[in-house]
Length: 267
Image 1 (cartoon, rainbow, N blue to C red):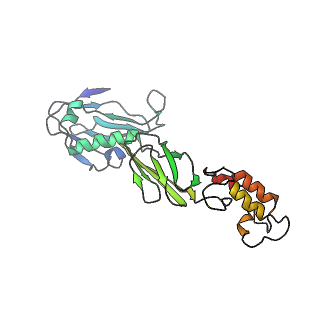
Image 2 (cartoon, rainbow, N blue to C red):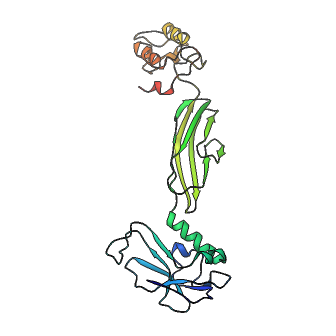
Image 3 (cartoon, rainbow, N blue to C red):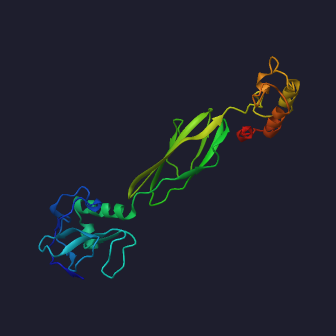
């Protein structure tokens, strides 16, 4: 149950400044509005798990700010499914609020929403330079800004960015999100791997075609040792150039002018 306090109120009495809703607010009487306002208050007993953060300055039995944590037992016998914050202050109070009043409201919104959880996915994580990757934000919670660090010195504030890696290398990607509940961040180490080509691209012209097949055929030894100039043809590194190496080339064959898939080199 609640009731109205008399007109002419400007202060509340903070009794728990350790709670996130009261972050940055001192204990004791604080002014939350710079004009006289009509506050309300709760006169009923509170359930276990419910915290009273502030009282009326004129009556310690009048509760003005109450917080119920998730799972808190309620007086009706149920439990709180989520955070509940009861601010017994009216809209006009916030229209004329002091910096302290604004801070309490901002804290309450941030606490109720919670920090966002950063998450993302990439269109591909292995490719040949220059490699263009489409990143998709998969963050949850209230998010108002995104900051991507692609690991190569480039950053962006787009939500779903596209980025091109120009040089071979292994790159760590970080997404930092921010919102009313605060920041959240996710870093995936060594997430993007960029190579200059595949081993079967013997002539390094960024494709695997008949020219590469011809080099392998010229180097064919069967079970014999690898000949001079043919060291790169031993794709499986077993000391000879045989059908196993032809199979590796076949897996990576892309045709003239087409980039091979780096995943082709996996056995």
